[in-house]
Image 1 (tube, rainbow, N blue to C red):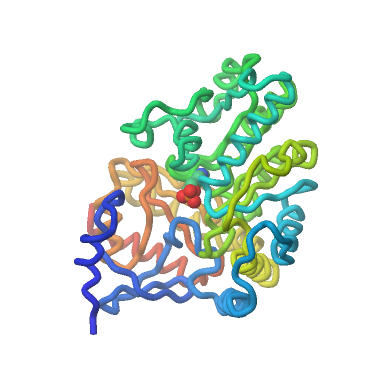
Image 2: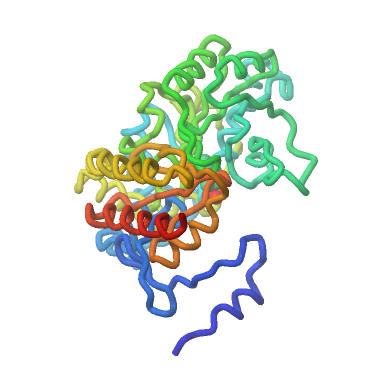
Amino acid sequence: MKINSENLYDQYSLTNYGKAPITLVRGEGSRAWDDTGKDYLDFSTGIAVTSLGHSHPVWVRRVQDQAATLVHCSNLWRNPNQARLAAKIAEYAGPGKVFFCNSGLEANEVLLKLARLHGREKSGAEAKQFHVLTAYEAFHGRGFGGMAATPQEKIQGGFRPMLDGFKHGVLNDIDSFAKLIDEQTAAILIEPIQGEGGIQPCTREFLRGIRELCDRHGLLFLADEVQCGLGRTGQFFAFEHAGVRPDGIAMAKGLGGGFPIGAVWIDQTYASLFQPGSHGCTFGGSPLACAASLAVFEVMEKENLLHRIRELSASWHLSLQSLVEKYPALLKEVRGRGFLVALGAQDDPSPIIGKLLEAGLITVPAGGNAIRLLPPYTVKEEELQESVDILDAVLGEYE
Ligand SMILES: *Cc1c(COP(=O)(O)O)cnc(C)c1O
């Protein structure tokens, strides 16, 4: 029997998202099925979340086992999964400490609080040095901290006044950031590859320039790796491609492979700015959430997925590039790295994204001008080719 979910959905779900044309009920690997039984190649991965694909057997087993053992116990007590996961993250990020939360917005909130603690320590007073610099096309989440850090009408409109203390520079223009620095500046927060902004990568020189500016002026370099991190680019963190290391890192989306979990890593130099009582999160780092995330690391390492992403993406990008050359009236360029990719479009790509969905390929719009392609790390080579074939057919027909 088919449940009439459409009516229930429209009746009870808050209308803050646009009306979705399909209802998904099941997933396996790179594929998802709707309530009519039609199957799709899912290159949205729930917006860069289901990094191992849908229902990876190892992930499912670890989550089931932990659910039957201990789900939640609060941060009043130690839990071994949290300790193991923090150590694992530090293995990739460097010497430092980790705080757990549930989402990207919460992770960035911790970075913004860290900036204020840093400014207070340096200036010797509260509210003297608390400005955070971000990029115009950035996206840092929908809380009052994240919104203020995201200077766009579509995010801020209707919710002003914004939180005080944010200034904005132009991505990849280091002078535009240097000019903003004064005695009130505490930190610079950057996405090494902008996600919602349309998959816009920072140049290597820009990220190095930000690191230098922060060193010269005693500011914190904060990286929002919520979307570009966790292995998606073929390195665990996207900033690694530039050979720099930030002082604080926000993580979420792909970290739990579908289970909600966010994390913040803070360099050991600054980790003690947080003291008992200065922050908290009831659900953060539960045994179950950490088991899900540990399963992501387990599979990523056992199946050597970072290496695999680097290898498979090289030829996939070439195929995508050839589509750009075949359909210049529709497509401008391929942007991004590894499995964090966008086809930059000449116009609003929404109609093409709709046709792709009808043809069985799920993609996500980004920045109003791009078709985002986010395959799971476990995607098969044939499935990458299938995505190119579907794109080719749909673009050919659309043209
Ligand atoms: C998605 C995203 C966020 C917000 O994460 P939520 O889990 O939706 O709160 C923040 N920063 C970046 C770069 C993101 O892509």
